[in-house]
Length: 396
Image (tube, rainbow, N blue to C red; front, side):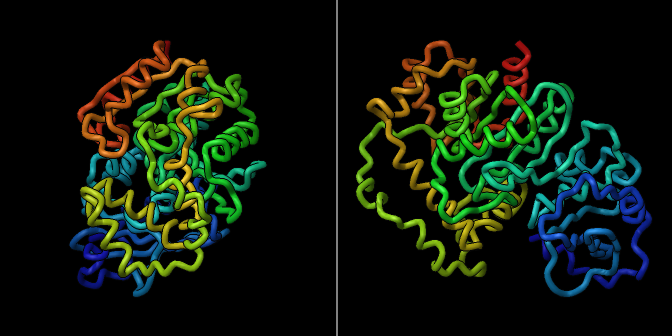
């Protein structure tokens, strides 16, 4: 566990030179700290741990204190030195697994971006964007035509960090926390269905003054991207749908029950971390280490709050209740979708089986398809092939 890395002998008072170098490069314009303050623990394995304390107008480093911290970054001394020597080294070490970032990826990765020393306009940057749908949290990189990435149920914009790295050389890539998730606003009375989320994506485009954008959506985010293309086709260039959530074609026997306002029970549901976290990590393959563990961290940050639970339950219910047939049914409307679209399917996907492909082929014969030997999150599980296919789609 990440906490184990901090259980080392008391470090000397002065932090290593590599950590001091990072703070000398700190750029507050790149990181977004919604609460106004943050404590980030930097662990040098087998040497010690220091806390970086951020406030609105100051940054300081001190020996790690007992008590909570918002994010934790841990690596060995050699990796920290490489990060300090190479301004792009932080994200490279993170992607390679040499640097572990846990707890809050928004703050942890934001710290890497803020200390990279990169000053080009297309550098990685975090921001809160005021829109007509409320405050939406984003991470962006690159310049050029816009690409907007929409995450799945229970995930956050952090699930698209590999996508930003893969595409930012040629596009302006923006990953957003949908309302109810991550660092974005979590209104209690929102519908949290596909039209509502599609309106939020359109509101983001308006706020950023983007007329048209490519869309990438994973799982529920794929369903949201479809809804944007159906409701606002003039705003969409091309789309890559990664294991998109699609309306169930088989009978939904619990539909009668889920029409009740059960999600509001999330406001009063007890959800202590000591009980919830072991259950979730046990259910998610690899939930205790690596990308999966960081993904669980992101899920728990929202789910352990009453508003986050309401959003999660409401969104999950709407996925289940998504109407497949009839004039307003997804499969009926899907035939009208006009943007060029790539569907990426995971052969090991237990949530959106690859068998959905044949139904899409009948409904959208012009769509492209790619099957990969992965599960439900292709951009994390098969990033090379996934992003190569997206580049081919957007580049033509």
